[in-house]
Length: 311
Image (cartoon, rainbow, N blue to C red):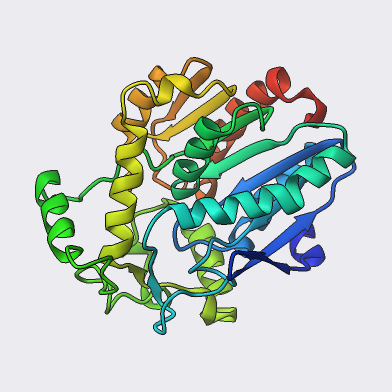
């Protein structure tokens, strides 16, 4: 059992009327890291990453976004990933930063590091744009700057989403999601990692607590995600993000658009871009050689931009 699993003691905090499940993991070093997961994910999935950060001297704060993991679900059907507007996720992030991260960073006399995957990357990028100077540096892993429509023309996806959300954010599953059960999804049919062992580990976590799982998003979630992506694409938006950033793309990503990520990073004034050619979307859940490339890039970046937390 990992040390993060042994010390896991979740607590709850309020983001408006919503309860968020969060956790703190202490380290001997002076660094503080806010770790943000992606859509459908949950704290326990990142125990290995948390241990790796603690070994590098970072105390870690992490949490489940509303509507997933152990946080309040938003619909009677708990297996629907739903949101009306990504501003609700912004409220989650603000609550955790204000109530947990900044007090911890102040106690350590440091500014925090941010690490975000996928949807978490989209939310963090918009925070970096709106609140300057809050983070010492950030690492964005396969951030949701664009979504791959998986064989369907992009214009058609947008048209369908607009149509189905015309009377407000639809609570209906995206087609095909109603019958999709994460617990029954074999490794051969998933599209996020080439590591069968880590996939099995994460499936075991869901089997141990099936209430953590989600089938997939609603049309309302997709409409909100498309709007949040459009915000990032506005002229001058990426150029206004001044925080030192490492952006890591997955060369074999079938969920988020690596080309869009690469282009966005090129527009950021203080960003480095690294692409891991063989990695699928969940790079930190990938095979050891691919994860080693992720950590090699991260360690080089941290040594320069967040030295207080490095070994």
